[in-house]
Length: 110
Length: 109
Image (cartoon, rainbow over all chains, first blue to last red; front, top):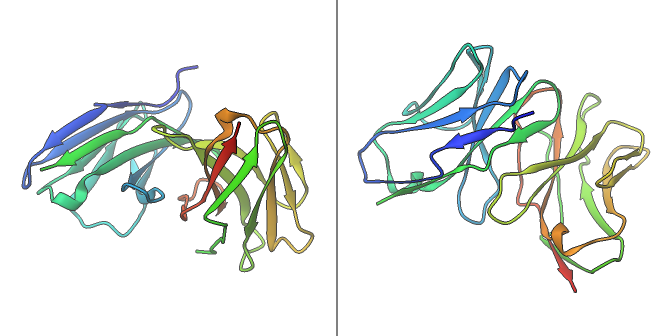
């Protein structure tokens, strides 16, 4: 059984640019959630997708958007990057209850 | 969201049991108590969850108070690999996980 994978591992962007992060969910999991983790903080919920539809959103601006594909993989897009967007972005897949997290993508905005 | 309260940090000696407390006085009847941990440079990892009864698995035990307003995660024999930040989270089904700051557990060799 393949776990949750994320790409890329690390990414450096400049302010104002756009970024796309990718997540492959664990086999059979129809729900994907995205979290942002700033240094020294706990992860903060961005949004969740269930069967290709957004199913809940945290306190993040509209420039954070996402997609879920028929195979349940997912993308997180961030437009107009700001310095404060520098963080570890985590994706988690689930079916019911337990969420399985990927290793994260470390985004640095300069 | 119902909130949880955990100590910021704890220390334990290697090969001894560790009891990590969590208070959740505003827990609702449908909230499950979940524990996740995050090892350095990794994503969070599920540890255990329960509703009312105490639970055991290969990683840990979860002791839940009779009034469900508090719980304790028990690592029976801590190893250096158990050094991590432990998060106590109230959750139902596939709802979002609301992480606090957790308890940073240090294991002393």
